[in-house]
Image (cartoon, rainbow, N blue to C red; front, side, top):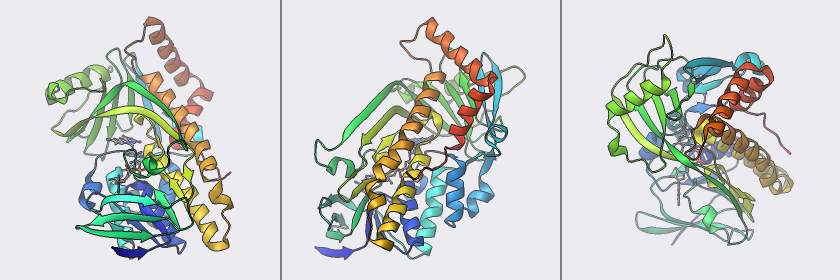
Length: 395
Ligand SMILES: Cc1cc2nc3c(=O)[nH]c(=O)nc-3n(C[C@H](O)[C@H](O)[C@H](O)COP(=O)(O)OP(=O)(O)OC[C@H]3O[C@@H](n4cnc5c(N)ncnc54)[C@H](O)[C@@H]3O)c2cc1C
């Protein structure tokens, strides 16, 4: 067995793991990131694309914001469309000038990988059989295999940034974590299309046939979604049928949806999930390994980044002063934000989707809620301040 040592062993090279590794590097703390997929795979995975103002500011401060500033699309509002009419929520006016940036998660991961490698950082791709152990002692280890050889990475702390299906959360002994979960009776059928977006800002649409979302990756590539069954059979959805349904749900007087070749399509399930606490001994869970939100609020990536900011601050305090005070509060500090973001994501999802068990009363209530949010300044402000991102809290 080959032995290595670092200060913080990080499992997973998604946004959480890479942001954490780079934040630690900027504080002079060593880390090694272990990722079971290839670099190409993680850089091409199609996922989130909406960055909160705070995420953009952080990436910029970390020195990984150059391409994001050049290529990202800054939006200062979204449209809520129902009964065939659009209503704009003006973020800039309602939040004192804040906005969001459209920049694909894959590009964020690419920029972070480039920055880690340029700084001499160690990100090991294609590792296998990762096993965190001894994290209930002061000498945790992560065992893994690479190219058929067995390795043991000794470290002071383990960061479980390995997503919902990762190995870190299940490594925590039974009975320690409490799970809170809600599954939704629908999913999203999403496409990437070689079609310039037909609106400058995102359009969230409530329709009798179900929710639809017009989003984008760039000014040339559209990203569009349809509410569907959680186990929707994609083979039943030709490109033509998808466009037909998008045309129907998004229709609005005097507005035209531009179509184009479908580059990629997939179905995403929707769930809300949280574990408490987010730490056990010297193992800290961050990002999707600790919580999942339905994508309606565009929060998954942003929440992962918020977690690792808290973790980086705790680890920095430890290495600078020897104190674990802030690390001991990691879970508590993160969960305050996690639950507010869960609430917002659940609320947006509940307001905009058709529930299979819904009845005419529920539908009237949803429409009244949309009418209220788009006609009351305080209600619109609530949506806006959550969408652009709540301020970080450190206690
Ligand atoms: C299909 C899909 C579509 C999504 N769309 C949206 C969206 O439109 N909007 C939105 O806001 N959010 C979306 N999300 C959520 C968002 O992408 C996540 O919240 C975000 O990726 C969380 O980052 P993370 O670093 O915590 O986890 P991840 O990005 O999942 O990164 C975890 C990393 O750990 C690696 N890993 C897993 N297991 C192991 C192991 N055993 N050993 C080593 N490495 C391991 C994985 O390969 C991965 O690279 C989507 C998620 C999915 C799955």
